[in-house]
Amino acid sequence: MRHGHGYRKLGRTSSHRKALLKNLSLALIASGKIETTLQKAKELQSYFEKLITKARAGDSMAHRLVFSHLQHKESVKKLVTEIAPKYSNRNGGYTRIIKTRLRVGDAAQMAFIELV
Image (cartoon, rainbow, N blue to C red; front, top):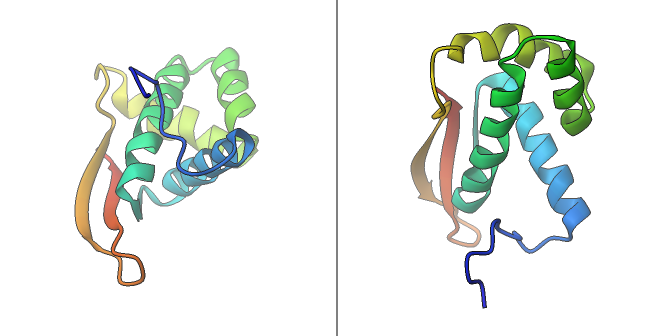
């Protein structure tokens, strides 16, 4: 039974799930808007907003904390220096999920996740 279990497993092992969220985050940083399944988007929203909150400090420790999650220098630099300062006066709600369509192959609910 779930009983307040804190995250979606997404049918993956913990290492696969961690890699999935990392890669989706890198894609979101690079393009600002991506299309994925609704469940992945909801899980990514929680993960990514915590990264932005850490990056808002803008100091070297913020770089280290975000780099420990993403492991990609250029994306970390872009997140800490360009993206996070836009949200300095905002208390959460950095991303938006918009439902789009049902995927043809398996009828999965698709959604866009974008930076606000």
